[in-house]
Image (cartoon, rainbow, N blue to C red; front, side):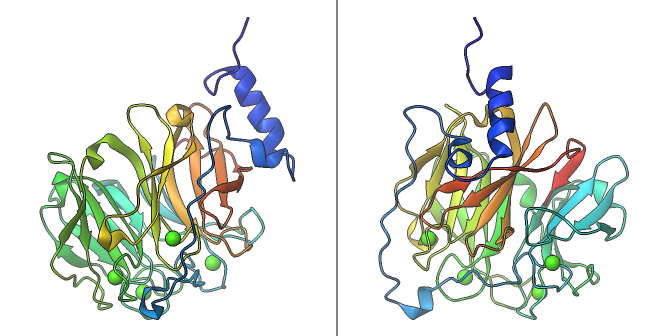
Length: 310
Ligand SMILES: [Ca+2]
Ligand SMILES: [Ca+2]
Ligand SMILES: [Ca+2]
Ligand SMILES: [Ca+2]
């Protein structure tokens, strides 16, 4: 008899059924028995300088006030902007240019130069250079180098302020050592301050994602999947102090991949992220609950198997 695990077809069918529903059933979509929701305590954001808000614009690439998804179509190397419609779907996608197959990492980066437009970073495979792409409200202005040597990183994520100075930062995992590094942004585009270590053993974490302040305590958080059990964990900020002990969110990520932060995609005010089911190409929206967990995870699109989500 088929055992209903995340791997099995029963589980997939159940997930699809639940994904199409709303309310309490929808809330159970990606929970397995025995797993616990992240229930991080909400400490008061007593220091105003530490407050990270869900600012519209961190993921808004076309300046319409709604958060979007940026992705590369791997078959062509074109970068595409998928404008969010604020309601679980997209407007008409458009191209932001070609040649992106020379990059082996593309990530949303928040607003690194504080001009109100969402920016992007990407690592060039042949050189290890991390490039800064300044958003201009439609696509991107000519790139600038952040620096070289980034090929030693297995994960590079960005888009939020992790040290409380209100400038968006970069967090990266050094594969050889497992060290998690914080590169403090300066608000001046590709210029960053001196990096410092904020974690260890992060080579054992996959799908590291800079989701922003998912528990709404004023400090930006991250999520990541343990390579040992394929469960997703929540790491509450402050990142500059090394994050709080991880909290189990959700298991079964062996069938998922390409986790990416998408801001307030569904317009409910909570930070969300997406993930792709590897064998179907279905794109799931993980709707943040505002308390560090997930309120539901509907399928929002299909055909994402050939895309690299920034
Ligand atoms: Ca938008
Ligand atoms: Ca910007
Ligand atoms: Ca910062
Ligand atoms: Ca937080």
